[in-house]
Amino acid sequence: MIKNSILIALIGLFISCKEEKTEVETPSNGLITVTKEQFQSSKMEVATLVEKEFNVTVSASGKIDVPPQYRAKITPFIGGYVKSSQFLVGDKVSRGQVLVTLENTEYLDIQKDYVEVAEQINYLKSEFERQKTLFNEKITSQKNYLKAESDYRQAKGMYQGLREKLLLLNINPSNVERGKFTSVITLTAPISGDITVMNANVGMFMSPSDVIMEVVDTQHLLLSLNVFESDILKIKEGQNIEFTIPQASKEVYTSKVKTVGKSIENKDRSISVFGLLQPELKEKLLSGMFTEAKIITATKKGLSVPNDAVVKSGDKNFILLLVKEANNNYSFKKTLVQIGEVSEHYTEIISDENIHQESKILVKGVFELTN
Image 1 (spheres, rainbow, N blue to C red):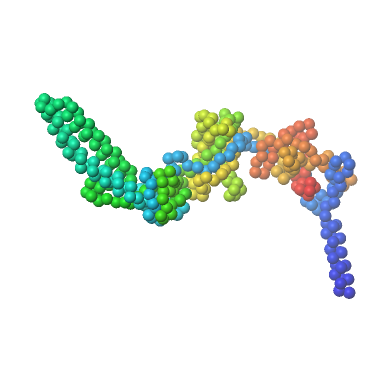
Image 2: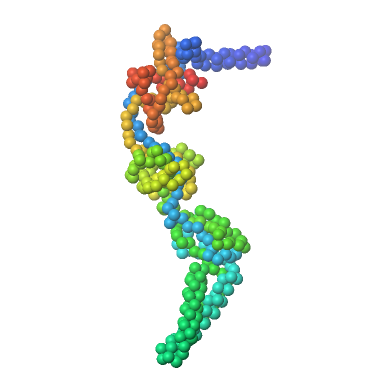
């Protein structure tokens, strides 16, 4: 008895679910027909096209970036082994702050050479001045005078060159001249910003071609877009931009065109366009994020339907056009349409001989009928 009761209950549930389903009739003429009861129970709705204002836009893609002067790659002038580094990606640093220390005996060799030249230069200078005096008094030959001058100028050039090397290595030449040598140098931050790349481990040898770390000043983030040559004449400074970060969220952000490139240099025949970012966005976005954008070049009015009223099939767009209402039935025809601009809620429909402002379109319940 219990099994029979369960079976009867399941059969009843199946029948009730089947009755609730909207049965759609599709005759051979291609019309989709529903009854008035089905129309009302599914909360379908028919409406005419409405006039809306649309933005005329140019599509572009790009990334969040910073100008070159606000991105610094930290590399050693002369290679060395990493002795210490206390920073991680994401840490903030200030200009002049020590980022990493390197150690190498080659630094000692430069200091030794510098001291040797510094010791010689005083002697060579005095010898040059002595030979100059003797030559003027016609006591010595011009050959001796020119040799003394050459030796002094050569030593002076070496002295200046080695001094500049020490300064590039952040080694104080005065300390070296007093005999204070060091095998350790420090690399400092050339700009203030956030560390975005960190490649240094203690004990690792870093050559001049290696990037130890990268610092980006996020206070100067901007929107960097590529616009195709065919659209570039439509772009002007000050135009509004709407963009998204598709890999992160669907939120729409805004910007304004700051500068437009003056030459076509990219392989895809595109031009760079840069947009300003609000301070609150700079705190939120990250350098290197991929963006998709629409640059608003103008506005226009057009006939439209809600976005949900448009059925997409590949690269084609359809609407359900009410062609007959009789005998408590609604008959719709799946009609191919050409769409124009698309806003957040509405899609522009390009009028033709089949579609006009008084046409009645199914705007709610489209999904149920087409699926």
